[in-house]
Length: 158
Image (tube, rainbow, N blue to C red):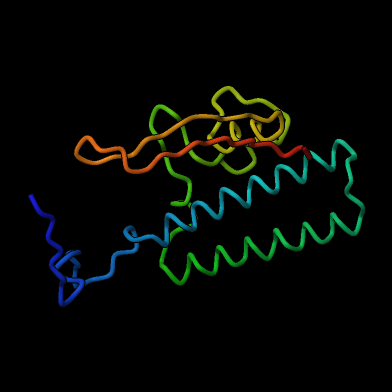
């Protein structure tokens, strides 16, 4: 059996598209959600370091606060451009809860009864976790890609 590649003249032959733009679809809401998750994780780590008295001077705190504020403004600006309600960036993951905590419900270092994914990731970053494994990807009973993973995830210096 031979594999044959047939070129397409247009992208419409591969991906169906609709005539109208819909703000709930596409990559923009997903990308904005990921950026907001990272922004809130960075904010939580800054708060943790500030309260522990670790390596943050007044100038460092001022720079961090200004950067977080600018990042939040950019996220809101992009939400307006892509017609995404900022409240929609908090994805409900069913039994796992929500991706982000509701405003004012989480403070780094404090535990809540039903933690969001952000809270769990923040705790993992604070304590650290090591993930190690092997992944083999294949097609038609042929191993084509072999991955060896070793990931250290922590907010502490190594």
